[in-house]
Image (tube, rainbow over all chains, first blue to last red; front, side, top):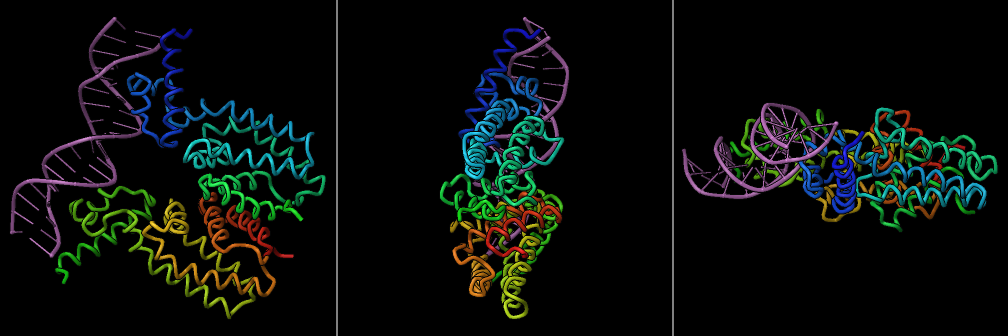
Length: 182
Length: 182
DNA sequence: ACCTGAACACCGTTCAAGT
DNA sequence: ACCTGAACACCGTTCAAGT
């Protein structure tokens, strides 16, 4: 049973980490996070053994939201529009913290990544969305969903969240999977 | 006029940095580079004020080679094949050191990057290659060369040089610019 | 059961002092 | 004109010692 102070430290650390990641990106100093939380460094490591553990705690429910969003779009729009809209939302997610694309890359392909399982539901929902679009003939049948997701993540990395460039590169990718506007 | 020992230190530092980047990637410790070169840290900073200066010295002639390669391919192959072949060579370049994609990203879009000017000739040659392919109808006329290069660099980043995945993602990009196999 | 903060080995970078 | 290596402020991470 967790002590009250332990629980409080956990919350404070999470809040401080969120702040620091927003300000300085994913590589923000962990000692600084602990300082902001008013806690010793070792306390941070006790609650979150790795930087990825911190990210996981911060992002898990966002991945749930992304999965839900995919399912909502599935019945609400045309298959192509749904897919395009969701990929935009996904890119916005990767832009949450500077440097987030790198851990996301790991999450998308490395089973040992701590974010790997947090992503699983989202990936499943994304695959449904893709298959739906493929069955409607809006996307080529031979493209692999994981490939697309990793490529879109790479676009987010390459454009650093600059919206116009992100949109241009994303259009190229969409064209590549056969989902371009005609 | 440079002293003999200064010149020798310069060469040693360059060699040590090349070694270290190959082993540990672009983020290798600069103190360690100096140690390997048998030189004090300040001597490294005197010759190469920044890590990017080191990269520039190591890569400049490779960019010249890449430019030359583009011009060679221009008359030797079909426009489409030439373009595809060169992009593969470019991706291989980005894989020279682990983590190189990040400075390359800067070089391709940030004028303040020290690699920016080193890249200029290569970019010009690449644009020629692209225009050639576009005139031949092998690539869509509305795609921007810089966009493509940045996207391909992003593919190199996303695949970490794993050849099969790199090829799959690159195919998607090629399809996106209208240069896929039909 | 949990927290503390001093400590370790490292990093990038700069300094006064040397030759 | 160039080099030295000690030094600074930082980093991630772990420790024995506390309550």
